[in-house]
Amino acid sequence: MSIPAFDLYLFDIDGTLVDSADDICGAVRDTLAEAGATGLTEEFLRRYIGYHLNELFADVFPGIAPERSAELLSDYRRRYPLRGHRSTRVYDGVEETLAALSTLGARKSTATTKGSETARLVLEQFELARYFDHVQGTDGFPCKPEPDVIVKSLERFAVAPERCLMIGDAPPDLAAGRRAGVKTCAVSWGYGDPALMRAEQPDYWIDTIADLRP
Image 1 (tube, one colour):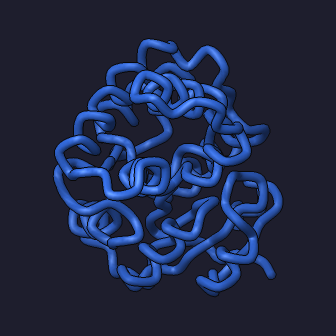
Image 2 (cartoon, one colour):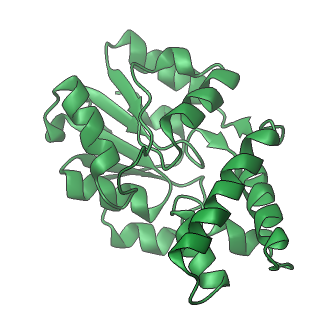
């Protein structure tokens, strides 16, 4: 199914624009090891990319107190940027597709669980920030699957939900898009469980980001 043009494109970052699993999982593994949890596999940790890390902490440490979970999250956020994104790479075709959408006059923003400043720094490091009209992260409000991060961009650009497409690789991306009333597009190259993504009934599926071009 071909994808029509939209006025606004919202992109998840990790697993959608960049392959950042090694850096994310490395920082998570170090955080958990410091807290006493070792031996967790890369496969296990990847399942939580796209979800709030509090969900991982609750699964690894059943009954964890909210205050302790907040401490672990703060420790992760300290460790992650120190890795310098050395193991992160941009997926093939991302820059070309973002440039092509720009030439069509489409506006672009992000909808990520990262904070806005962290998201901007990642996009700048990989020379992708110039293709975005706005960078929206999760700043002090509920993260995906809640729709808040999407609604922020809809309000900023005064775009009707039906004229917006949310692109992501995990169930929370698609659930947030559905709750916000926007169209959703699932990508096949990220970290999300395909069965769980299908359960969210995305409007579109793509196997390459170039498929976004009208």
